[in-house]
Length: 373
Image 1 (cartoon, rainbow, N blue to C red):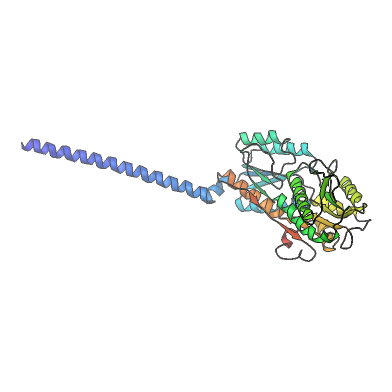
Image 2: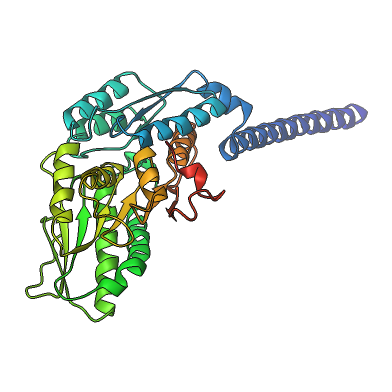
């Protein structure tokens, strides 16, 4: 009897020990899983040392629409600042002119072949870039659009954009311009829009924003409006009181854009001319060098972007004002978004902002830093 009782006690003790062991193992497993999950979440939420170290030797490759404008040099400065901060190598290149689409396509293909951790792209022509975009997508290289972005890109290829809201920037230009010309409105007058091209999203949006807002303001003042000159922007109204005339050169050259500006300046019906980017605004200033028709008492000239020529024209009041982007911030945010996307973070598009500047406010602390040379 004693032996049976002792056997029961020993069996009970063994079962208790086994149960305790199982419970201990399950508890350890749960603790380890929780710890792993917390570590992963922390990496996803913040730029930890681990994620930064993993990307330090990585390459971020920016393919811009050009390198000929000072604007792109300012973008590069901002991009390099961000690359230094996150510890990545940076390469940035663009074609000689913004009509060299084939050259940009080759640059994009070269970028993909170098297997960077991310690519920044300001596409001259999305359709022409499709093979490179799809190649990046198939190899899981995130693309960040910047400046004009990558209009109509394949779904999922572009993770986010760092750019000015160009349509809103065009509206800002029109709103400020209308204040300057409303007293000159009359039947038969014309308003000029110089557009570098009709393919890049940024150029189209700045022109369309200006046209739509100007048309709205003029119609509110009691006049009818016809938009003419290029099929991309046309909204023709026969017998309209006022014409908004859009000029787009056959190719992106300063010579052709200057001729477009001269033709407008030599037509006495024009009361205002808007150059929708640095190239077009500079063409307007150059066209007026011997004509001297721009100014407070003549044709109201309005520009976009900055640079030495435009800043000088605004300071001298040859141009009444201009809209400036923040090119350094565009470059800076492009690299920041690229770095985050490459490290698995969710990224969202960023509006990098714009401002209206004149001879009166161009030295203000909140504007001067955006007026690059």
